[in-house]
Length: 247
View 1 (cartoon, helix red, strand yellow):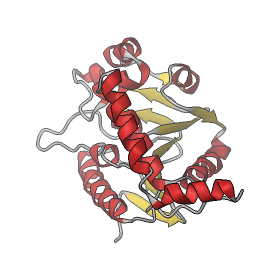
View 2 (view 1 turned 180 degrees about the horizontal axis):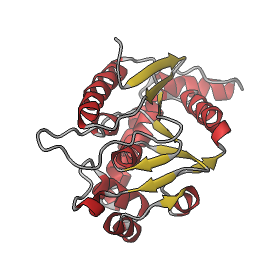
View 3 (view 1 turned 135 degrees about the horizontal axis):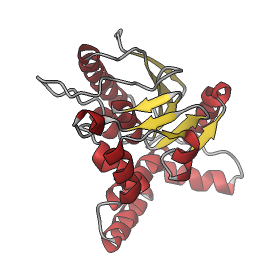
């Protein structure tokens, strides 16, 4: 299937979704919301995929209109946020508004040295509407999220790294290579373990410590019933690289 707002490719166990711009009008944002949802549904059904890379343009990462639509609600974040596979955001240039909300829904964010981050909604009498008020505070803490959202202040990549908004900063020319290598390394691990680790961390954020520990223990025990766990043990004993099949 062909898309107008994104391109898609798969190499081995890694899928790459590239948002093509400009997504600068409500009509384009609505189209992107539909196409992202459709693509993520297909990814969920593809058992070969273990890691997803989400990227955008060189100058901006999915910068859309900051004003919410008068009719309809074009949420683009939910399809990415619902994926149980690890998602790496490769952000280049400006990461603003819904673009930042989309990046927040990913599990790891790699930025370039020239990247800037902003929640500008308050400047137009609005608030973030695609998960920004919830995900930003969980990631960088209440105080910094309050500052970014209530002032609409833009921060640079170095500040984003300092507060934990991004995991790494790399030169622009190295972004693709760094993210691709990280994805390949992750994809070589047990796919069930990757999903369970993500589930334990995400769900544990909304549980008490005791509940989170029980969830972790349950998922750990479930892994012992899989063929991948048996393969991991054999590979360790035979001093070879494990060949995980996701079973």
